[in-house]
Image 1 (tube, protein in one colour):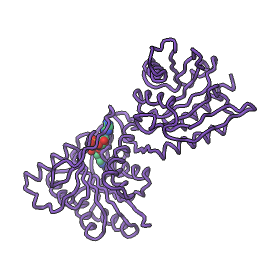
Image 2 (cartoon, protein in one colour):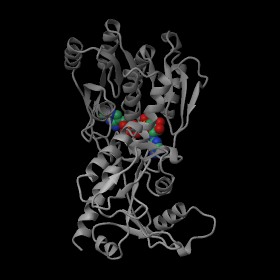
Image 3 (cartoon, protein in one colour):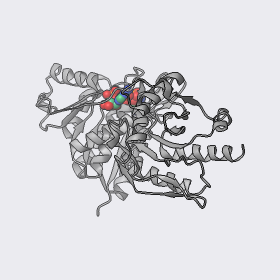
Image 4 (cartoon, protein in one colour):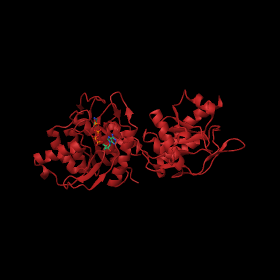
Length: 423
Ligand SMILES: Nc1ncnc2c1ncn2[C@@H]1O[C@H](COP(=O)(O)OP(=O)(O)OP(=O)(O)O)[C@@H](O)[C@H]1O
Ligand SMILES: Cc1ncc(COP(=O)(O)O)c(N)n1
């Protein structure tokens, strides 16, 4: 089968929050081999863009020659470009068959202008040869106004798709203007550098893998949402952290977590047994949460059994904890319940953040797990490593361990078991 490579052509951001590094990270996590050509070196961080040095045309051309001589390229994704780069991309487009996904980065989030009117005029020719253009709302308006003002519609004889990005994205085409489809998004309350790059390179990567346009946009949306939720905090803001959480990733995490658990003498198993669960990003229901269809139960002669398979929708109980915790920290997607031991909680307080709820305070007609998790998170002011309760009304006391995924949760359980064994 023909190997599909994506060629990323853009500027170099030394922090990797945007530009060809962010694009390459995105392609890589999506299983696509990222070939990259740098058009300009752009010293910057989350405070400002300090400079922009264009790479000489000869060197850009030699990079293109080297790539096309040795690789088949099915998708070219463009970021920050200069006139030379556009001339060369259009030259190669006449000789090779690849789709262009053009992210028209007119200026940075920190307001550094990458494109003047002269360059924007040249961009129109690139738009005409593109399969998809991904401007944000402001960039879209600038482009349309520029075409109108300079009467450039005559230069456009093709009709590329346009995805006007925002929290909700609008799919249209350059000439038809009507909205074909709106793709709803979820707003996370933080400003992240490079989300446009991650989103457009994710879409380009899924196209490279053979997905249709709508599916590529839908999956790209999941990638950029995760990249915002798991963004890397810098002194001045956040850098995009290309991350893709899908069912395959969740099942892989759970399987490896169970593999790690089997390596230890895990004895903190409650009478009702333990379960371990991990959700997709921002889960809507327990169907978005994978867990064991059975339980982890004690073996009377020592050790434990892991009963059942890993399936989505397998546990409502642990799912409710994750579904509630996500409202306090969308990074938290995993939980495991283990046995409560009176003196264990004190011993854990040095290494772990802990909160709790008291069943005696539970109001009538509520889901205990939803109410209890909410109560403990509000008391803590976020999601702690551990939420426990001392039981009551025939309910066994319980410790619940939370984390960003089940591998992290089991690593915490391994640590807790070690502390318990040495009390
Ligand atoms: N705070 C956020 N919460 C959720 N999604 C976000 C957030 N910020 C950006 N996104 C996602 O990233 C995509 C691209 O962001 P945006 O529309 O701001 O493009 P952009 O302005 O080119 O981004 P940037 O300038 O950061 O590269 C959006 O479609 C949106 O889905
Ligand atoms: C090299 C490079 N490419 C793209 C952007 C846009 O990213 P942002 O809009 O987050 O500033 C950037 N700042 N630098």
